[in-house]
Image (cartoon, rainbow, N blue to C red; front, top):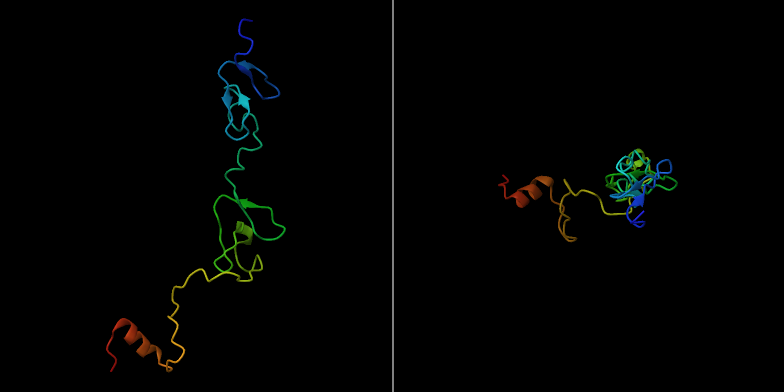
Length: 128
């Protein structure tokens, strides 16, 4: 053989073919021939670990999700099974997820005004 260092052997245990244009798997970083390049063909153990990156915050759960499923109460990241506050024992540690529908806080010395007058003042309606 004139060029003993040219090419690489396929990393698939059953193949070991000498390939002069090997392809490198982007997940496991091993070299493969064209027949074993796909994740399924070489049964890549790291093929889908990059996709499922959001680990469930519930103690004892090891599941991961592709998208972050955040609890609106405690802001933790959970799997689909534990996404509801009752399913992960939510303690509501963080600020509320949405302030929609919340009224502005009144000044501490303000008199108790009714909702109608507050709305009138806030939205500049005329109150009769």
